[in-house]
Length: 306
Image 1 (tube, rainbow, N blue to C red):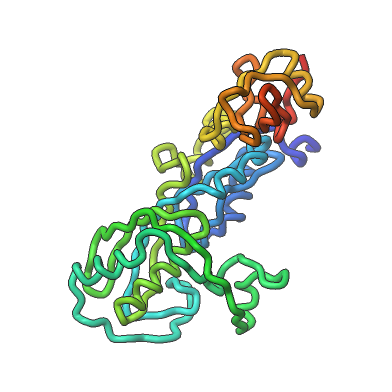
Image 2: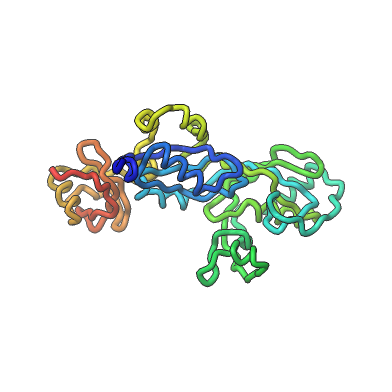
């Protein structure tokens, strides 16, 4: 019983297809329990209304989850014209209705084009950003509104998928920190009728897409934690964008003790992060300190000293 309460040393990454109506944290906890893992974390919140790709990190993989928070993301959303809600999505209260003009597909394309590239975006009140230590959505629920500074984000691509007169579907590739609800509201404002989103699905985040995605039901159907564990991706998939640095036995031992070590880092700049491997096994991240010196930055706790 004690071992079950503590959890098992499960390490790796699973790509979850988060269902609608479940918060990211609730989805995370359900996955953690399925794997009986000690630790779990995700790599970027999805609203309860949203569905799609939510990478879940288990055990040691949580040490590297922050690297995906900076990643670009791809979403598909449905935008409803003529109705403005307080949250910017279908779960909010309707605060205004406007007539939708006789728009053409070209009108919508032209409005979307105005938001491609780098733009300044004001975060919504219904967000997890904080003001004086309190989350904005908590203030919004109290009927309060505070001034928010615009942030620079980038809409790498915005593609109109379908147009139905009073609604359209949009696929967008965006930088970190971009709010799709706000983008839809701004496009609606540009069209003169306002808008909110009625559906949102994340298709891609960083290097991950939906090709190896798991629903909660599919994970449950695997039967037991050991079978599920066999489906996990290794922790280093989270940092595959970083260069590889192979260290020998001596360097490995020093790094494991928290000390800098000699390594062939001539191809890397001082300050660069690198993936560290010893005997073809990922041991964590190091930072280049000099022409032949690397220091440990974030190592797996399972690193063994030779």
